[in-house]
Image (cartoon, rainbow, N blue to C red; front, side, top):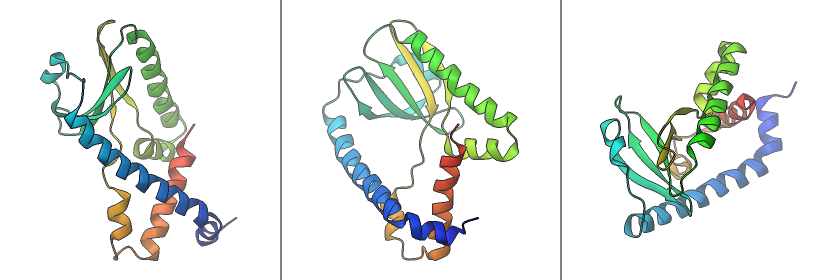
Length: 174
């Protein structure tokens, strides 16, 4: 059995690369988000306004847009919309598979369900029409690694805890 501190010493170069990669991605994402707000062809479907509010474009690609919005309970969700028709059935099947993963985690026991709920996003639903589908799922956490890295109060125990959470996230994957 390998202790957590031994695992950290073996994985530190890889974790440092991962953290730097994530930081670079967040910096790039922030710049892209600013550009997206200025030059977007994404249009929020009015049908979603009855269930979600505070929508903002989080990303845009050739085939669709992703928004962050608040649901009726105030939780942040990611809403994917399609710029091309015909995605409804594909997204419905994908959503069903994600929900099955959550059920399998529940069947595997309380600890697996807890890990799955903490680290693996799941589909909350698919709606719309064949022409204008949308896909709703949990949004990823909002605490940026930059804020974590710059916080001088994060001592060895905190860093080890974050590392253990990374390991837990990987362990929770099916």
